[in-house]
Length: 173
Image 1 (cartoon, one colour):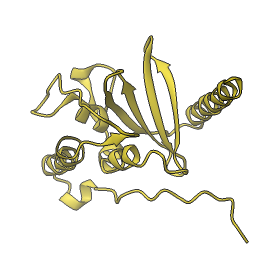
Image 2 (cartoon, rainbow, N blue to C red; image 1 turned 90 degrees about the horizontal axis):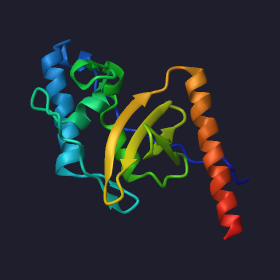
Image 3 (tube, rainbow, N blue to C red; image 1 turned 90 degrees about the vertical axis):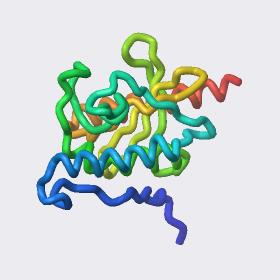
Image 4 (spheres, helix red, strand yellow; image 1 turned 180 degrees about the vertical axis):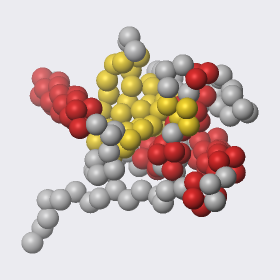
């Protein structure tokens, strides 16, 4: 009997502060090393397009993209480390590189004025990767866990609306 269930998308293991005996400095450097490997040495590719990095402002010798993926806050100079984001630092690159996997939900939206974003969603983990499409290149922008049901519902409505509009555009072609 054939199953209609889409194959689950496996994600890499978490990296936890406990693995570093609570030593935050050592943990931060280990997380940064993973980021460096995944985003600087081996640049991810989103559907045939290589990603660039938002390097500036550099803070504590680490690129802005790193801080957007591992901390939260509105102002660059006032962001706070987010252990849940840090634990999942191995996930964004895999989700970007394998974004065509049928389990992942991928859509586009416009936020912050007219900036086009690409969103990649892992449903079971409630994890979102946000890319910014700059035309000639794509920037990994941020990643985060969606902890609030109303936020998840809003994202899923946005996804469903996007899929419906792309189907309508395809039907008109």
